[in-house]
Image (cartoon, rainbow, N blue to C red):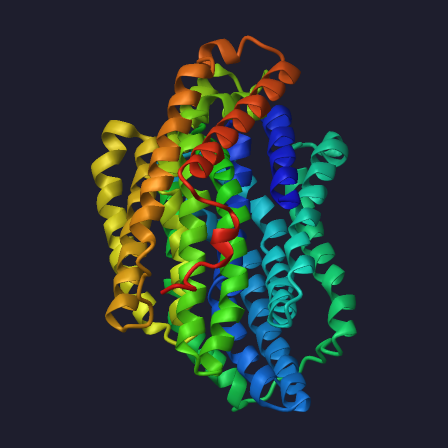
Length: 501
């Protein structure tokens, strides 16, 4: 939660200092490329392959074997990441051209040069942040969740500091943000090292061909590289297509995605982080009942908190964008355009979070092939939706396509677990859906008819907007939980999810 709040502060500072123009579009391209690869190598495929194997070593083998696995994975991962980072720095202009084809065709040479120069600074971030994810995986496998969860706070602090204090010294102010990204990678990695030392698992990197644990991780990781990152691939495809649209489209998508990622990060990432080690332990202990109950708990939690978050984002999209980003550099037109893509992204929030819960049901069982097949279907679906919606809805059509493809992905993951009898829903789901849908209906009516329209919102000062937004968020949450309570639901029921299967 702290990380996401500081992320809002970061984006507020960026929007007010840099706005939504060609220079910010260039930075977001330079930041998204290593961020995408980070989610592939770090939080994505690597984590889903590494944590189950690490958990199995921890539960079934001696500490010396566990330490050996950590050392050899650190060495192998470090060498691969170093090579990829060097290639990215050298080939920065080519990489940028691939992800911003529209700029190449439009002859936007200045934007390409600026993005390439910033990518040379941001690409090494991949090396440090992926090793940070490696350290976080070790800590999570030992039920140490707080330190990895706090680490992104440091990225936000570094970017805020670079925007406020470094940018005035730069010939092109936005370049300071690229330096902030690089500094943040180093800071985040070194921050976790003392905690690994406390576990006596501070790695001494070694590279050895044929190490049994490393080979298993690599075999699991190769298909997972695609499967676990389908959402990120879809978001990058949105960026590529947005480069063909009017200036500002990439920035509008970025800011709306950032708002949508608040509930996705607080709920979805947290659930995925906690569930994977728990499911891995259930699989290693050959306890299918515990395995199924963990999935049930994750899905129920997603519905109870994810659906009202979706409703809140859709109804209050305009006020949220205006409160956080409205300034001289980010005007009312930008607010309206970013609101459109936020509503489209918010529609898919449940799908995004369901993926975070359901995919670990495969990875904990060391099945990465099935999510690959499902991921391919979801990505093709996304491209079809992109072509259908981009003409009538422009940048918002790209966001809507990503949302719909997320539901396709989640639905196929769910069906696969049901068919394999890995998960069977309890009888309490009908009542749960009834309660949540009714409560969300009441909340949406309260917010829609009570909150002022965005046209009035932009006439007030920042303090007034922030106070009023906080008030209406509170009103929406209170109305939702009061209706749930009136229908007989209690929060402690969530902790017993799946107990009466």
